[in-house]
Image (cartoon, rainbow, N blue to C red):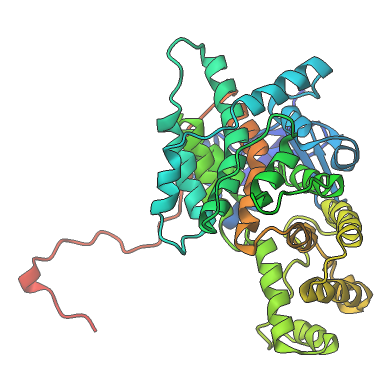
Length: 432
């Protein structure tokens, strides 16, 4: 017999079914609540609302658990590559060797960007934010690469998926080169996904870029850790737009826009801006920590704590190790990175932060990693978007394939004025 809960409303008892996930999570299915009672639920921020069932990512904020398709993210970060992890998320299982080879070849084949798209980059205002440009350019891809009329629906989606994953990386590097007035560097067939990106970013005719496997590994781990994170703001945006049966390009463009905000994808950039402010202010670390603990001081430590994780962010532990290895390997002499290391030490030893579970999260360490890789600060969120792309695509596909698909259409509780008759303009009273 299926489990139910009883709800007493206006003297009437209503039974609602309980949905149980594969990890024992429980949800009350309120799909017929309004039909049965006339009531809806109100949950600002949707902190207690499940918008869908999903087989892609499992996370437990209380225990600090994150798994993609059941595989712990720790194992993927240690043993996998970003390309393989992308395949896992999108296709539901790790690829066989022939499948991985074919997948990698497809990504290489679709990595070039139409030459006419360079004109778009050159016509954006000089100080345009890279995320705004990326959102517009992802949407533009639909016009440059329409669905092939001879392909099946499945073939069309597979081609679109590989185009997005390969071309977004190329477009990101292209936008950086154009912003600096440098010659665009094209992808090379002999380099893998992450090495190709670093080469496209930093190679130039007078100073050829040397591929360092330690930097390539750091980028692989960074993108693996950002590949999906359940129903967050940007993923929900992708699913919501996709529920209108919008094409994949437009849905991903919506995800890019949602990720742009400082409370979501922009957090790693905010960490570096905070470190820069500490450096320029010249305050001692004791003063910085005291200000962070003072409720009357507007200063806040960025990159500490997490809305979902009530213990250590499992991604942060992995990213910290990568961060330490990268700083040792590169021997970067950067005052901001020195401040970051000192700040981390102080916070981890301070009872105020420890007792409140305000540990450094993945954004704290990823900002440091990206800076050590040489990525400019205004491109940090773009790097996040490239990493999150496989998750967005997997979530969009899952929604599109759902036999119980419904157009997202949340309700509201209206709090405006009651019936208000129209007043002709000559009779309206002036308002203060």
